[in-house]
Picture (tube, one colour):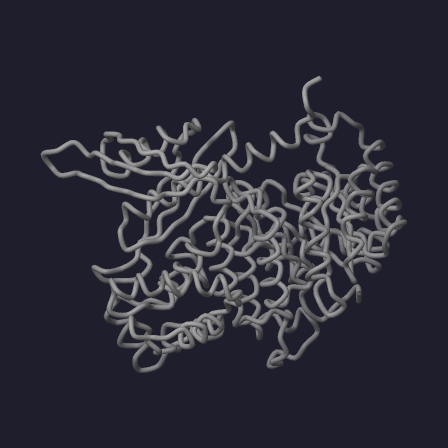
Length: 531
């Protein structure tokens, strides 16, 4: 790979850092679906996971490498601590990929050295050099990250980076691990590295940053101006704590403000050559997919992909946009994959029209999944005059993308009113195929349903979030409900959609419970039998 590329390399870590968002745990099939979407999007590198972390992570990295890591596909990467066992596991999992990368890291800030690693600077320097060389023995493409670089002493950081490059690192990643630096400081950090690491011309400078102060994207753009050529980011900006730099915001900033950034790449100001390999028309689809599979909703005012990103309510703005979109829109909604398709589906629409619309929306379903989705579509179409694209998305996500269905809701019945006590009756089919019915009283209809379900399933949990949003406008709109439960310090999410908000809540709740039960089942199977 060219060490001074005339474009930005997009390194997507949705499947690794993004999955560390509370409640965003993905199974292997879901990771593969996202990986395929990232490949269509055109990302250069997919960090598929942390192979040594668990057997599930190892399998996910391996499957992504097998499925998406083709000759013409992206580089597939696995994270590894600067420890031989981690690096060896990463190398093993990445074997099926045509293009693979090991990404190894170790902390370098004094606060991390003192309290986390309990090692001296000289010890960490030796480990970094040795482990990069070890990773290099498995493959040519090796990335090294000095964790908490933003708070690392500059002179020591230069020394560590020089040693890592000398040992074989082809990419040097500079993480603002705690989202502490301001854009100006981060830009100066990159500039200092360019000027003070003697062999920096032999490696690509990458950046990784968290959004704790809401500055990640701004810091990355400042880093680009000072020589960074790889950006580590996630779809919708998901990730630890306040998340990562958002891929869609970075890509569209470089797309919309190309004339401003062109000179930093040695291009003429008016050059129309793209600054990334991203197919921007895939952005919206990929954003929705990640949101649906992780259960993390995109806030309406989120830049680029939020539902309000291209909405205008002010009369002045509406008047201007009607006369010329450029008056109040700096980018075309179609450039991120939003279309003005006016095909309306309803109860008289056939399977072919439904299948065609699904393909246009980016869904490739098997025949059995198509049948399930079509049956649900007909049910919704009987209740609504017209079924929108968002309704279709909700149907597919509710019917096809489901956790293991250990417990299944067979009946939901609620009685409530201002002068009555909310009462819910549920019938649930158990994994053994038996039906169990119970009744509960709650503070409201949803609370009553959750209590009735708990009486049947009996898995202790704490409901920490219940959020609802309308999929479309109108009194007959479908409602999307997301529920998060805490069980044994882990967070599990469930998401469902229905024209009845109480039914949607019940389905979302039992999906979250099914995730807990599946996890407990897997853990029990993995434990050795008692002697």
